[in-house]
Length: 269
Image (cartoon, rainbow, N blue to C red; front, side):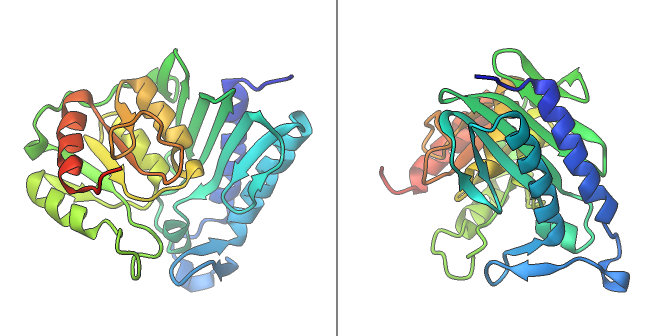
């Protein structure tokens, strides 16, 4: 069975990122040519999402026709479950549609139940985060590590909220409020994949989210883990890709403090 290399994933991400960059408008209200549709009240998709995803699907299918693919817009495509790709062709679509330059392409590859490679590419900053299982994580080829933070009070965290925030009782607003008072601050930047990578390289001291999708965090989770962060679900379990998906990423000392925090508030398993 043919399998990819990390270099192949990086090249795919860069090419898909070029599609995003070519259609990006910093002032979308002027001459916007994006075609926007809504999957929910605030959950949108653009024609650029689909073009980026279609490019990636074609490339992967041409080279690895028997592999399974889980993609944001196309869903789960049939294939051998021992060889799985996780694709988010445009993570940060709401930012993109509003002309906010914080978005990325996220690609992960899993073999026989274990994540092998992950790539997250930010085309506006030309930052390519990557990881290979057992070998480490890099930003544009340079090794990265999470912060050395040990004190939650002085940590800067990141989080996100579900698209059904208006009706979902598990909308994360309670944790956002509490942890805002316990830390230096909490940011919501709008891209789960980049949030993971920012913990991996020490820009954030931690990241959590109540409800995510596997294509949101597969690549970023591997990058953070291989960089040296602890990556689990909110219950502290190592498997963060089995539904219902939650995620908690931080350097060891901060992860332990956040895990203890969530144990106080989460319902028992």
